Image (cartoon, rainbow, N blue to C red):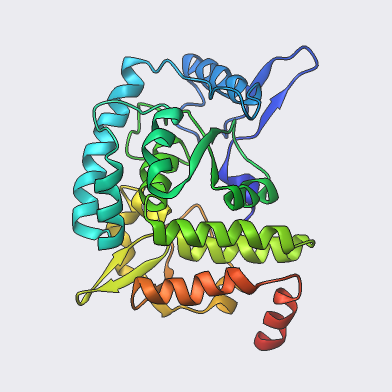
Amino acid sequence: MFTEAQLYSPVTRSGEGDVTVHLSDEHPGVHDPDYRTRRNAIAAQALDYTPGNPVPRVEYTDEEQRVWQIVSAELARKHQQHACTEVLEASARLALPEDHIPQLDEVSAALTPLTGFSYVPAAGLVPLREFFGSFADRIFHSTQYIRHHSAPLYTPEPDAIHEIIGHANQIASPRFAAIYQTVGDAVARLHTDTALKFLADVFWFSLEFGVVREHGEVRCYGAGLLSSYGEIEEFRHARLRPLDVVAMGTATYDITHYQPELYCAESVSEIEDVIGGFFATMNDDTPLRAAAETG
């Protein structure tokens, strides 16, 4: 089971209103004062956002735009080699720009006509209940910062590249968007943290790191794979297991390394039936039943 706080750099606001993003000692930008100031300013905009108001825009620097251009071009090539047809067709309809970082309202303008989803800003970590629960209203909480320019093909935390190139291309598929909504609907039924964590772990091994067999080869549909230059090259070396929501929800794994074990569907229809069907029916008793099965 992953520790959700590891996925993001914590964000705090002082009594005087100053916003600070706390980067880890291993973060590529930790010793760059300009980058740290930038991250703080972008996070402050997100914290000040009120639903119903215009989504704050970020005036991206030339350096940040270059990072997007490099990563976007590289991932586009990787997607043609490794992404499943459902994602490739959705990506073509969404048509994200490769030459500049799209603002979140631009992403929403392209995405909403396709699947009804819209993007709102997040300063960093969004609590699981709020993050997954918002899917019921077809809302996705997205960071707006860009990874450090010294390592354009690497990030220790989800940034706008992950949120947009990974998730938006996936959510542009009506079939995957419908599964997201079942996740949000499930959250409304869950009252225990144990059940919420079980849901998050199944989501991790499916919509973040899911793979599917297609035309005799394994291709990816998970947003974590679609947005990672390194991991999208390595996932075919992982041990593949059939879809098994009990195993997914009880697995122990390390988010700081390439995933050594992945769950492979035989088709997108199987993802809908097994993963979508699980989210549509899970409740607070689900982890107890899973423990009984594995015990």
